[in-house]
Structures are given as structure tokens and as C-alpha cells.
Image (cartoon, rainbow, N blue to C red; front, side, top):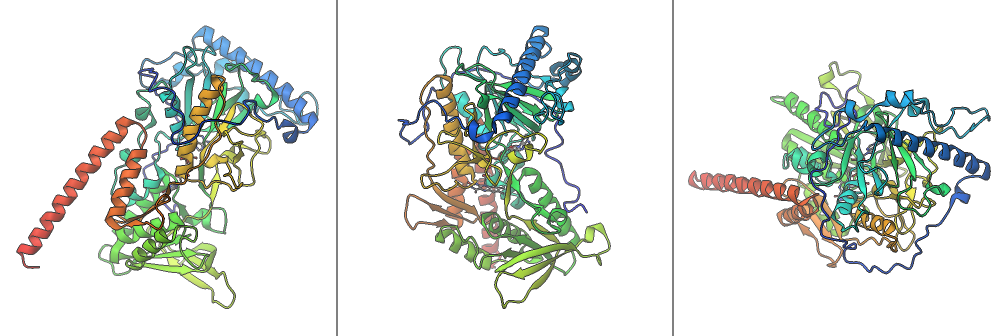
Length: 588
Ligand SMILES: Cc1cc2nc3c(=O)[nH]c(=O)nc-3n(C[C@H](O)[C@H](O)[C@H](O)COP(=O)(O)OP(=O)(O)OC[C@H]3O[C@@H](n4cnc5c(N)ncnc54)[C@H](O)[C@@H]3O)c2cc1C
């Protein structure tokens, strides 16, 4: 089945493109993360946990493997540099043929570690596969004269770390060369994805192209998918010298990037493989691509229901923030043409939200065509085989009560949206035959110390949904944009500090409050710094939009979006005024 139907594909398969530097400027200077104290009681020497991470024999094998790898990659880099295979672009995108030459690398015999699990040679630690061994190396513009920072993932954690590094003031010769890798060509401001469904925003506003965002910076962007990591810093390879290889990253295209510092920011996606049928028949709402697929499906259903009495039925699984925001947005869009059924295992919606947000959401949902099915979990999702055509697909959800004594339910719907559970994407890189030796928690997030460095890896930082960072009480911080955004500020600063031999700062999360969208003119905001206050309705909506406008990346983009939103609201107000006057004059 194609649950989404034909949809524009904003994230086509990796097809490398590089945004070239236009200007290299020092920015406003080193400005430590805002609003916090900067005295670090922590040592600059990170904890060495490799004894806990690898058994002794494995360690020595890894050391051997990585040392071969590192020298081979250095060899390749030098060879490529001397041949100038990779030219730095003056502006815009490089062509693939000029940039890469995997066949050239293969001809040079870049087979780093033999694939051999029988115990001979480096058997059992053969981390580099055949395809990886044919990888071509990226030549950094300044070789290893300046520190090389590779950032994986261009979301709230990765993109904002790159921008932070750009904004800092660097001593002569210390400004790092920065590469940002993302599988998509656009950054997605996820909290505003709902507004794509309501038509309130345009794609360029909330999902600008990386090449546009970074065009005035020295950050190189690669549109590519990260395939595997081969860090060597945990083996003491990085030493104390700031410009010394600390590992390599392999990209799906065959490109290999050797780095001195790595930032892991791959984020998370919805976990669908939870109940039978969810992968096949439910749509997630986690990426820009997901938002387009849901929108396309809604358009299809709206077209089909035109002149037809049967309502469009949408099931939303989960009544956390994402489920409730979707229920509010879709019910407002469908009005009396549709019914939204929101299912939650808890007996209430938003069980962990501040009471003000929960009450606002309850009010809004009860004023729309939303049925809450609380205290149920979805046992399975099936396709209704009695529906004949692709355009007419229906799904059956079997709901099981969470408590005894309540009857099971079966509901039939046209669209199923799944919002429960998330799957950090860092863990997806770790395949059984290619372990990456990062300390991951049970959810697949990298365990970090307070300075956001991955435990046992002095040259790797992890931020956002990829990282398992704990608060002062040892509780895992939530996977939110707010956390990722604040961590990016610290990661940028701590990279500056590490490169300049200054103390690193412990990350402290400051909870500023919680916000949610409840439709085109509705939202709820509960700030953490004013007890008991919740802004709701149009005021909450405007306050949320302003808060997010401020958080958009780069001054230039913020300005463009600010003007666009002002213009839209002026047009809307004029239309509303005209409508009111027309009604008054016609005596309605
Ligand atoms: C619909 C929705 C609404 C949300 N609303 C809010 C909200 O209101 N407030 C809030 O605080 N949080 C909200 N969140 C959560 C928030 O968006 C995330 O916690 C935040 O985006 C995490 O930032 P990140 O940098 O870790 O990951 P992301 O922002 O997800 O970025 C990760 C990036 O890595 C890239 N990537 C992943 N794997 C690879 C790979 N193998 N190779 C190359 N690139 C890769 C992805 O393309 C992506 O660009 C929302 C999330 C969703 C889905």
C-alpha cells in the first residue's frame, strides 16, 4: 500500500551538494552561552571510559584497525590534496565529478581493514566494509592546518551548533573548518510542521534550504546520508593536539570525511514498528517529508469527499503534544467534513503537560469534531479488504482497553496517524557487523558527560535527540527542540574552549516553558517563569509565533519570514474586516 499516495518528495535520495563559502568573518566574538555561570569545576581531561567500553583484546584489535585506518585516510588525504582532486568552489555547488573520485581511491588500493571474521589478521574487528574501502576522501580546504569539525545532522542540534561556531571570535589560525552533513536539503523547524497542514506557513519559511542558510558562512554543507562512524579518539589517537585526526565518517555516497572533532546530531524519528500493521498502514508525522505525505493524503480525501455525505475519518494514535496538535489542526481543517478520533492509553490527554496547556487543549478539542478514545491502546491496524480501489482505502484499528472490565473497540477510518514513541537515528548507524563503539543507552542515544562530550570520546559531542543528557537529578532530558537548541549553544562554546585549551562548561538546561499549536488562531503557552500563567487563544497563538520567529536560524531568514508573516496577517485582517463590513451592510 502507499498510504501517502503521490507526494512531492522534499528529501529525495542523497545527491550531494555543497554550499560554498561566500564570506569568512569572525562574528561578534566569543560569547559564552547566555544566562549561565561560566566557571567550570570540571577538568579539561575527559573521563577515559574505554576500559568499560571494550574488552582488552578488542581494544588492541581496534587500536590496530583504527591506526591502519587513520594512516590510510591520511595517506589518501595527502594524495588527494597534492593532486588537487577536490577544488574549493568559489560559490554554490560543486559538481560531483570534480569533488569526488572513489574510483581513484579504489585504484590507490584503499582497503583499510580486512573483512575477516575467522580470527586471522584483524578478524572480528573488521569495521570497514568492501564498499567503505572504496570510499573517497574529502579534502578539507586548509588540510589539517585548522581544526576540522564535522557535524552530522542539520537539525536544531547540528545546524545551530554550526551557526554558533560561525558566530564566535577565533584566535588567528584557530577558526575551525566546518562541514555539516544532512540527508535532506532543507532544515526543518519541526514545531511549525503543523502549520503546513493548516496552510498558515509556506515551506520556505519553516524549511529553508541549508545552501541558503549557510551561503554567508564558511560552513560546507553536504547533502548525504551518514552511513557509519569510525572514531579513534577513545583509543588516544587524537592526543592533545587540536588538529589531529580523531576518526572518520563514511557517507552513503562513498565520501569519507576525516575529522578532528565530531558533533552527533542525527535526531530521532517516529517509532512505527510497535504494533502489527503500523509500519504498513499508519503515517508518522516527524519530518518535512511526513508532513507533505499527510497533507497529500488529506487533499486526496478532501477531493474524494466533495459532494459526498460520508465524513472523512482520521485516527490519531497518541495524545501527547504531537497527537493533540495534529488533532486540533486537522479537525479545524476538515470542519464538519470530517471526524478525528484521538486514541490514548492514558485516561487523559497530555498527561505530562502543565495543567494550563491541558485545559486549553481540552477546551479546543471539545469545540471541534474530535472524539477522544482514552484508556485504549491499539492492538493492531489492518486494511479493510472490502474497499475496492486504492483511492478508497480504509483501515481498521482494534483497540484494547487499558483497564479490565471495559469492552474492546474496533474503529474504521480513512487515515491513521501515529505519534507514539521515537527512535533516535544514531542507533540506526550501528549495525551488528559494524559496531561504532559509542556508549549508547537503551533508547540508542549517546551517553554524554556534563560538557556534552560522549563518554570515553574526548573529540565527540552529542546534542539533541541523539544524546542522553541528564539533569541535576539524573533524569534524562526530554527530546525537544528547546533542549537541542540550548545544547547547540553549549556545544559550540565547548568546541571553542576545547580547541583553545580553555575549560569546558557543564550544560544546564533551563526549562522556559511549554507551547503548543491548537489551530490557525489558537495555541497554548505556559511559561515556566510565571507561576500559573497560560496564554491561550489568539494571544497565545501570536506569542508562540513570535517566540518561534526569534528562534529561526540566521538573521537574514528571520527577517524574510518576519516580513512574510506580517504581510500575511495584514491580508488576513483586511479580509476579516471586509467580511465583517459586508455582513453588517447586508444585515446579517
Ligand atoms: C511534529 C513535531 C513537533 C515538535 N514540536 C516541538 C515543540 O513544539 N517544542 C519542542 O521543544 N520540540 C518539539 N519537537 C521536538 C523537536 O523538534 C526535536 O526534539 C528536535 O528537532 C531535536 O533536534 P535534533 O537536532 O536532535 O534533531 P532534528 O531536528 O530531528 O535533526 C536531525 C537531522 O539529522 C538528519 N539525519 C538523520 N539521520 C541522518 C543520516 N543518517 N544522515 C544524514 N542526516 C541525517 C535529519 O535529516 C535531520 O535534519 C517536535 C517534533 C516534531 C516531530
